[in-house]
Amino acid sequence: MDKRAASAGAASATMRAVVVTQPGGLDALQVTTVPMPEPQPGWVLIKKAFGVNKSEVTTRKGESDPEVTYPHILGIEGVGVLDQADEGSGLRPGQQVATMLGGMGRSLDGSYAQNVTAPAERSSRSKSTSRGKWPARCRRCSRPPTAPSPRASVCRRCRRC
Image 1 (cartoon, helix red, strand yellow):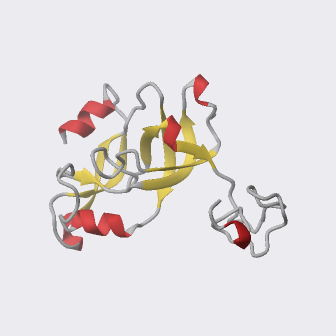
Image 2 (tube, rainbow, N blue to C red):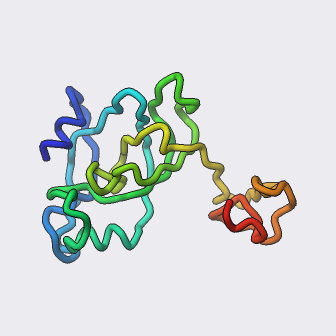
């Protein structure tokens, strides 16, 4: 866990995380307490929930890139509420954000934890649609959505948004 300890700096705060201890089945996953990460300059700290992706199953089984070492916190993507950000990042604490890739869940610990740090450039504001609030207009073509989805703020005509 050297990389986790190094990224946590002098932080004494801890959090819960799902850690894969070695390649294997579900028994390789352990919920444990780890040091809370501290964002480095240009990074953000997100208090969040995570999504499950087939990539994490591949990593858990040991079938992933050689850059993955164990023990390791999985998760190549995450969403949540921004807790810390640099002033120049364009993001502010309290915003809902999404982040993905940039080494998360591979060379860096990922989002299967109560908190995650991620590059600000890989983090963007997200609008929650989980409460039934659909966007009035597609963000790409500005037309009313033809079939709004709780996972998207675009219409079916603009699938690339």
